[in-house]
Image (tube, rainbow, N blue to C red; front, side, top):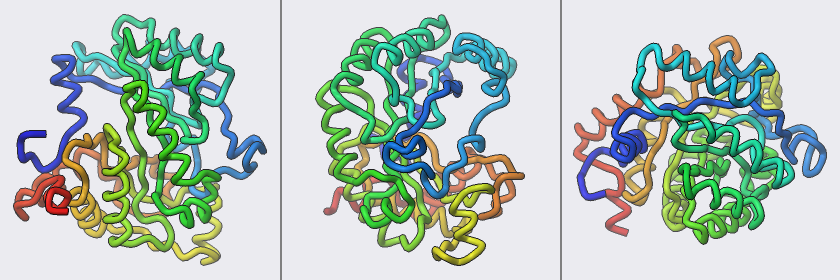
Length: 310
């Protein structure tokens, strides 16, 4: 990044790459997860409620092609000329036989308005066979692999029942980089017993990994999760972040992060009726992004400001 923008924007990269606005469309496919099917655990991550990020058009047992068609019909009303990335988001989207994965991914990429494929997965569900499939698709449609990192501290990962380690993340990233694939990491701020000093350590560790991109969001306590039960009983100390606290954490994180890493988003937006805390009054990601840009400009700071000094 040569310009001193507040942060390195993924959406701007997409616009430069494709010459227009690009929208992700979530696809609901019945994948499972080793953290739910008993392979590693049968309870999942303590904060996880997959229904909190599934759009309505994914909930009607439609085929992949039908879901894409419905999603494009919905989004094209406002942006008729934009292009799309097919996004396998819920559960672990590399957790299946490789021949089945190839069939699923190819169907998603066959739509004429789909220019890329985004796949959310776990670091312990990536191997050479899967990467070979992704590398093949990447020759014609851009593949974005999104790895759930969540924290760089193994003690936190154990506490939230991720059932993987940060070393698993390092191994997965190394494999993906070998094939020159786009790597997006997913990180949660406000996990139990983590603080603003923790996010500085996160920034330094993730910069060393040389990820391509990051998705950040606040910890949300959702209904019908273990975290909800722990929050009520105080079995685990959880202190939801206010908007102002979160923005302060984000800016501090960005200052210590490599300026070469793109930022895709800053917040999670779950349905209001599922969110126990924090109550941010349904503030949208673009609102938070604008507040962050304005605040960083006021402070005369930018992504990588302290990273470049270290």
